[in-house]
Every structure is written in structure tokens, then in C-alpha cells.
Amino acid sequence: MLNDVLDTLGTITLDEMDSVRLLNRIDTKYVTTVPVLREILRMAAGCGYRVLETEGARQSPYDSVYFDTPDLRMFTDHRNRKLVRQKVRTRVYVNSGLTFLEIKRKDNHGRTRKKRTAIPRGEFADFRDDPAACSYLAAKSAFTAGQIAPAMETVFERITLVNRALTERLTIDTDLHFRNVRNGREAGLFEGVIIELKQDGRCVSEMKDILLKLRVKSFRISKYCIATAMTDPDCRPGRFKAKLIRIRKIIPQICVNI
Image 1: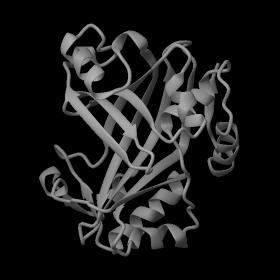
Image 2: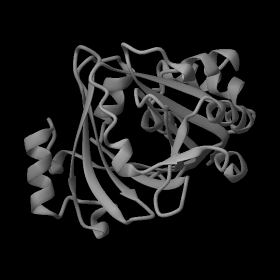
Image 3: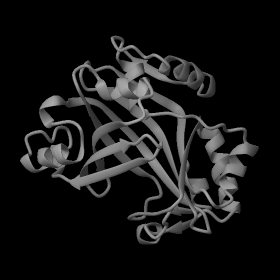
Image 4: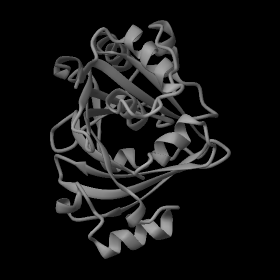
């Protein structure tokens, strides 16, 4: 779907991309559509952005399972704007099969830090029978394996861009599908695109200029929280209800399969 425009960008390897150290990092998210994304990529190519290529592919499938407590404490903490909060997930990089248990922690300064440990591919759906993974969770998070269970699966394709100055990275998620593990309901953002710009705050961003020209506005969004609000009729969506209304205005097609 995007191969023709992706082929106009130069490429960067994973080793090269890992050299991009954003010491004064600022993260900004955006929501747009595939037709607008095509124009973003076209303009990015003209500005010298490069696309990450791994094993000959410029789009990589990701599959994640988020874990939560029975009363959805992690979702609720985010909904209620709790400054210090966490998310726990497993993630498999489908092309390589590499699988990790990941813990994301947000502090009261707004900074997000991620810690992860490799787990066997067979534990992607549920790691809680692995003593080593459970010990890692207890050491690195506020939760134990006995407090949480699988809650939401998110599947998407990711494109990663790096600017020529190596001062910013851009992750672009498309073809987003959500499956609520607990009730079986599914949802998706058919033509939707979620972009995250990670930049060195000291440097000028050509990508921000591109997004401004195309009228793509910043949008604070969590895939896990939006997916939960879309698929769990028993949750209290709170401010995520307003976010869903805004998403529906941006994206012509979103799907919820009851």
C-alpha cells in the first residue's frame, strides 16, 4: 500500500539508527490518515529522511499484549491523569521472532522509561508461568504476576524514519487492530495512522514543519487506552470518550466488532 512512496526514501540500518542518541528527548504524538501519510513520506524524502530497513522490509509487523489488573488499574491511572504510572506488555517483532516483556514507567516529570527482558516466543500471550519473567516484573514494576492478566492485544505495521542530522526518529504505525482478550471484542483504525516524533529538544525539526504544513496536529494518545475504551463497554472511558470523538472526525473509518 505504501511501498511505492517508501521506495523513494534512502535507508538506514538498525545499527546506524541505534547510534541516534536523543539526550534531551521530546516525544510528540499525532493522528492522521493513510492518504496524508503518503504526502508526509513524499515530503520527508525530499528533506533527506531515511527509512529503517530490516531484512529487506521497510514496514515491520508488531504484535503486543497488554496486561492489567482485574479492575483495569493501569487504564484507570492513565484515564485519571495520574502522573506516576506504568504499563506492562509483551511484544513480539514478528519478522525476527524476538519477544520481550516490557515495563513502561512514566514519572512525575512526564518522562517515560522502558525496561525489557527477552522471553521465549511461546510466552508472548502469557508470561506468568515463567519464574524468571515474574521475578523481573516484581523487581522492575509495582505489580506482581499474580495481580495482572492479559487484557488487550494490539497488532500494527511500523515504519521508522530518521532525519539526516540524526537528531530525531519518527515511528509511524498503520493497519492498527485491537482485540480485547477478556471479552473477545475487536476494533480497528482502518485508515488511521499514529505517529510518534522523538526529537532532540535542542534542534530544529523539519518533520514538525512538514506536519504543520499538512495541518496534522499533535494528539496525546495511548493505543492501549483507546483500544480499551473502544472494546470494553463496562469501563468508564472518561476523557477517552472525547478522544474517540476527535479520532472519528480525523479518520473516516474506524471499526468496532461487537
